[in-house]
Length: 427
Length: 162
Image (cartoon, chains in turn red, orange):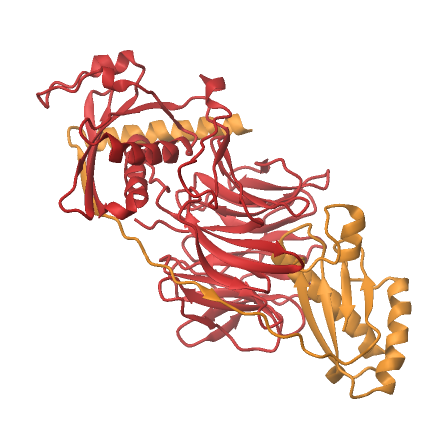
């Protein structure tokens, strides 16, 4: 079972090849077996939805699909589901879907989830959506099914933000892109001849902040996704970078260079007041907020090499506390959503850069990746997956790993893709 | 390592399932939700015409890995620049710091800035006026040489004087 689950490639050949493709390189050793019934009179429409749901769930690394479950007929009487038939097929969970089209443009997708060993229905949900947007409807259903099975909210309906660099002849262009987590539904937010770095989501997912070099100097902009309205958040003649939103959306942490050196400030968005957070002659940057918003994690060179430090926002004179000690380069840290650990970029003794995880309760770090120049980790809002960039010889692409061992690569068909940022929950 | 994590997650799943199982003994969770699909509007920035720059012998100084210290070779380059700046007090220059691709982009942006400031500090201590200098950084965003190897990285850890 283990072997058959490794190295599965899924080709979405019927879809636009300009979008990202997905390749599974590794799966869980002990997946949950799931089957989804066909819908006899709506096979065509449902096969599209079923396909998307299956891919979403396979991507979690925790679920494996059992085909041909329609061999166990559905009963006329609601009370007589054939649990023993499902058990013989090795199923742990079964999904029975149905589709209604109240009018030409809308769809109601109902799915019922059954727990085979407990012999009971655990969820009955209906997703209302537009027929033109079956992918979103499917992602919502995937997340509900995943939650019914694992108790953990799914992330198939969330979004990725990333930077795409394209070189045409000697001209470079930089695009800020947003897509679904499976790489589909890719849209351009900003198209610029100058570099774009450090994209970040607002907590509600309606805005993004990023660093653009469009004026010749790094500056931070906030852009509204729906309207395209954008503003530079501060007008200064020195550079500004590394934006991160506070969980309540009221503040933006930033790195300012007004005394020539990188220092972290908090900007209150309502009235643009700045509060200085760090004051040290070494580099202080890459601030990120703890899930509850009471602490800031940042990278500092104050020990002589880049290391992660945490500073409490309670109390006026709280001192930064160093939290990484292994190796001579630990940077771009972030919090797991339950704040039980941190993910960051770590340089190994070999000189390679990997994504690493350190749980609070442990005094050692876990190396999660093995390419030569892995960077820019961003964690899914349920804490189960991390997206990061594999960057080597200018061929950067995005990869997603689940903390239970699954790994996927999302290659780009054009240029390099990097600096991914995972959105919060959108459902 | 991955195996250990795997066990933890599976255990978590089992525990959560038990909790859910116990708390909702005979009830099915019933939900209804509507798909919200936000529209997205993109923005395009067009390329600006290159500005005409004051003609000055463009110079570049190079740095060691993760360092903003000037090497003796860099100091030689800067000495030549000092006399040019002292003789042309209305000449303004930009010190543009860069880093190689290793490490994180924001840290490299800060490192490029430190390199530019390091050059600025040397020029200031040798009589150049602050008003003639502007420091900026491109971090690792504008490599002089492509390729992930020592030779390219050495060319990219630099301050360009423009």
